[in-house]
Length: 409
Ligand code: ADP
Ligand code: ASP
Ligand code: MG
Image (cartoon, rainbow, N blue to C red; front, side, top):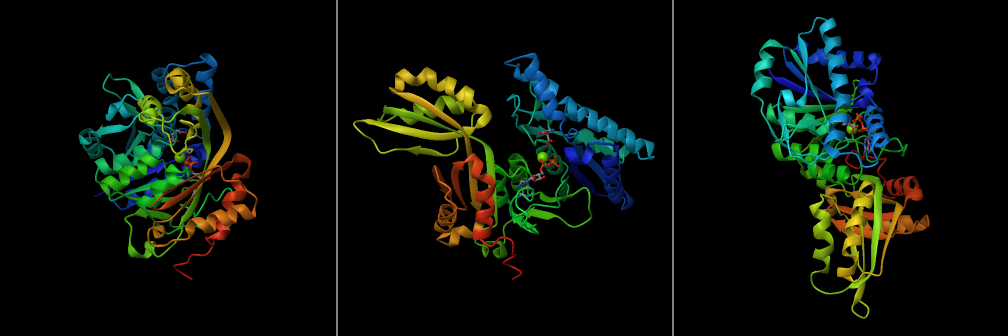
């Protein structure tokens, strides 16, 4: 007997019809004599509805209560699905994170899993064939409910697979795998058979929401193979796995975009040692992720510093900066939320030059202005005006010939 971990997203559990398709998928490993741990998201739209409700009740909702609220979406899904399994004669029960327990940090809304005790799960698998676990949630050291950030059920799934030493974690979703770019905005997007952990990490952190970034970090750290595939078809999906030589032969693997960004500029701050630390230290202390940073050349002892943060963190960031204005000698604090990040990603970039210039030329041909640029070993990111996002994705997808599988050509 082995343990199979399957995670299903919001669209896969959105109604009874869809849950019956999930049921059919869960039955397969059972027929092989395996046990199944099913991790579920809330029904699609439910988490958004709960967040909106919280914001209606309070302009500045308490973060711990917000987690208590939004985690209920998953409680509904797991109870309903366990009922469906039971009504089909399958020995099953639902479990919330605190009943396992899945321990997390206390960073409400973006908590990190710190430890999963698999003892109880393993004991329960003696009596039950299917355990239906609520994704997205955890419990902190004070016994309070936490949530893992949007898309967090992916991380619950992979972390449970790691804790149970499952051979693979299957992530069932509404697309048949990981594509060269979002198939919902680029009709030429191509499904990949395999993708390296590092590429998937960049894709996820640059906006490809098919997998939450933390889930890929877990998969890489604990060597869990992740199989991303569709709930609504039987075709094989994409395996996220260790890098191999074949992957390096491909110059660019994918294009990601992230509209959830904002740009902040501090004008005429003092140009002297300690200024960056004074700005970014307090922002990091609030667990706000700063991504691209550019500092202009100094003029008469002053400089402009521009950086990006997730759009939801603009207000708290501005609040911190207002408090620092005097200390920094800063003239003005500007912000622009109508921006998007476009990233070109591929492990093959390590050994090839010229990728950046192909990308820049392609964008310039479409008259798309690049506001900021950042690079890593396997990624080039450009910040552009948000309204050009779709055009930029399609243009770059064409420029790198991604519709064709260069390994099969
Ligand atoms: P789930 O609810 O199953 O977790 P998500 O909506 O979180 O599903 O993730 C699946 C979505 O991710 C797809 O519908 C697609 O629009 C989007 N997506 C973005 N980039 C990619 C990509 N490179 N490959 C596949 N899907 C992508
Ligand atoms: N329900 C949560 C969300 O919408 C978690 C998830 O779906 O993975 O973000
Ligand atoms: Mg998701």
